[in-house]
Length: 173
Ligand code: PNS
Image 1: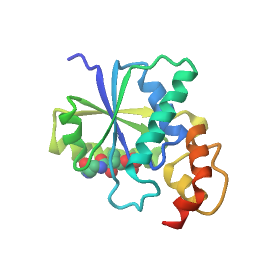
Image 2: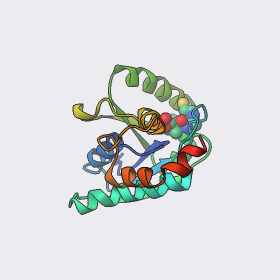
Image 3: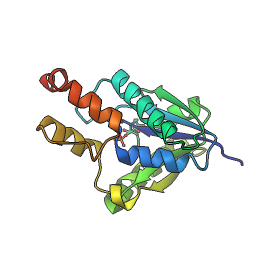
Image 4: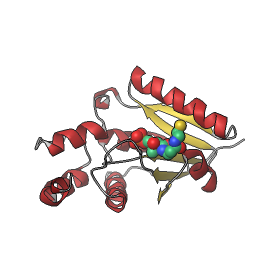
């Protein structure tokens, strides 16, 4: 089987430098990447899904400006099961980033559950660069809500957006 279309899911609330790092790495081995924005139903979101989509697109544009060779990248929004979203987008492979062993434990449970639901879909794990192992969307949300600086954790466009819209975003949460 030749695999060339990958599905990279996440809540991207917001996209971080860690996610951007995974996109850069996966871009080297695929010629079509679908990035799926889903909802983690147990987490209270910071940004609405359309804003997350816009910030994802802007973060990918930042990679283009850096002259990164990128595959065709489509961003989609999905509601429902991850395996169904991958299948509906003709992807046999899901990509997940791994920072450390606690990610691995969680991801392996998700992997096995997804395999039980659809054994035709594989998951490939990609290690995040060591320098970004501490970065997570949930930490970004927490620091941002408490008024801290997040510029070392998120792409430039995300930092700009969050700073410019701090009043409207934080008054709703
Ligand atoms: O940003 P996250 O928390 O890593 O993204 C999680 C996401 C959206 C990939 C996950 O919550 C998910 O797969 N949601 C879809 C619902 C689903 O399929 N659940 C069963 C997975 S075992």
